[in-house]
Length: 114
Image (cartoon, rainbow, N blue to C red; front, side, top):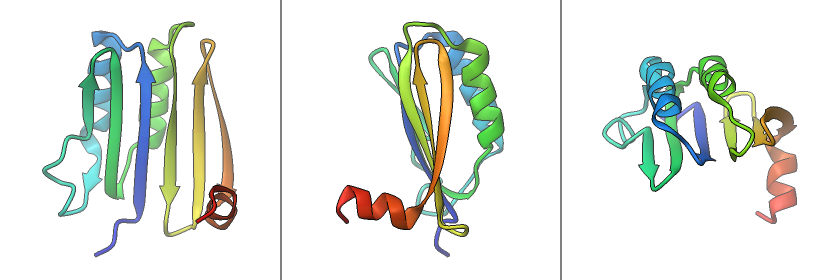
């Protein structure tokens, strides 16, 4: 079965409190069979990298975890691709705030040159 959702993102610099909060928020994610054994969240130096493909992703809980631990110096992004609805929501993390925009995947693919 094809994944319904694909999620990719990063945030840095990230402390252990944010990492713990994200791990807790991600506990209910349901990955597809191929991605099940891959790390959902990994630390690379002072950056946390998130990579997910599957059936259910706790988007609201993840955004709330980031919001609760957000510091002014942190930056990053989180892309949530809903293949069923054919939309992408991008969360921008910068200057102590999170903002988001949503677009059709057709628009995203056209813009990126695919």
